[in-house]
Length: 169
Image (cartoon, rainbow, N blue to C red; front, side, top):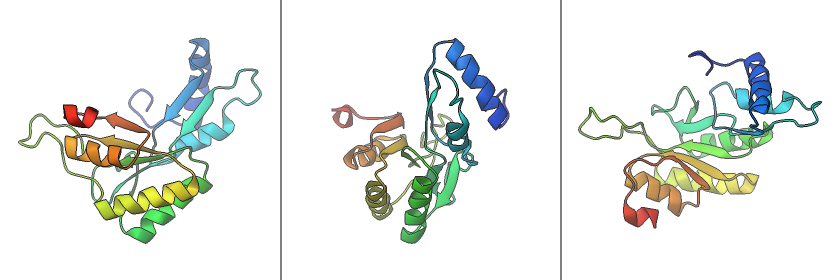
């Protein structure tokens, strides 16, 4: 996002110059529905003596009908999951971002909105990501979902609200 609107490739190239000027040499893109981070990765100023490093998820994977539509693509079922992970590998993703919970809403009785994959779907994501050589990163809120991600060997947890001390250890 740039000034509240979807970023373009031109925006990304302009921003990379600003980032370098400020000493930022590496960007991690956690995913956008249009895969802009992958496009930016391919065209980031390769002619520069100091090109900015871009790591990208491409687009995030979320459960169909759940939270995450603006960050990625909704998937469900073994074949769709396998296909989505393979496509991300083909397009050059550096890792798989999984949205496995909703967002935090302190106005609701349950502070974390619904969303996420079943244990069986997680297993398929894990297996296919391993076959493609891609680490997993996970958007997760609530102790149960964070624990599932940790037990699955994700390389990072994004957000992590409502985690227990036990899960932290």
